[in-house]
Image (cartoon, rainbow, N blue to C red; front, side):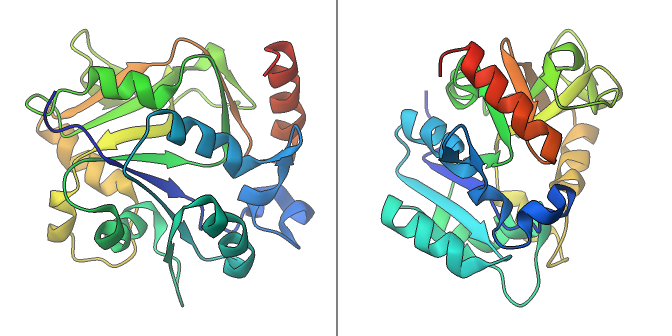
Length: 230
């Protein structure tokens, strides 16, 4: 299929405040989960789809992130002096990512099941959608106690509501980012514009997913990985 993404953006710039003391001396993506840095679990998924480029943004304790990621072949988009949030961070990284749609992925979750990026790639229809989000049914979301972020219709068109949690993996077209004047902004702003046009779609993840953005999620994630023999 034409119009497939060739680059992966990893969001790794946050302060990790929900982790409390665990992020006092290191950035959240470097916290170990089952003997590996949290971001390395995400990197494994990214490498499995063989992208041309993998880019990560950094802000909090950037020297540690650079020392870890550069030997692994990950390009760094440094956000200094201010953090740019997901939308601003993606916009700032575009010179490294290149033109065309990209995969974008948070680095504070563990996926047990099929590679979410591969599922997104197989379902991507650029003529019909501007972004495709991988969402998780609330019942399959571990370490999460909310009601969800979205709901969807039979055609996969997404709306704000309950039932589906955004899992942190997506494909999206980036050309519209140039029209957003803010330097720091959330991708929610970008999604809302797509939603109004009926161009924001979702997939429901068939496996299990764990939020590792808080301390309790660490033990949950390690238990899930152990049960899955990963």
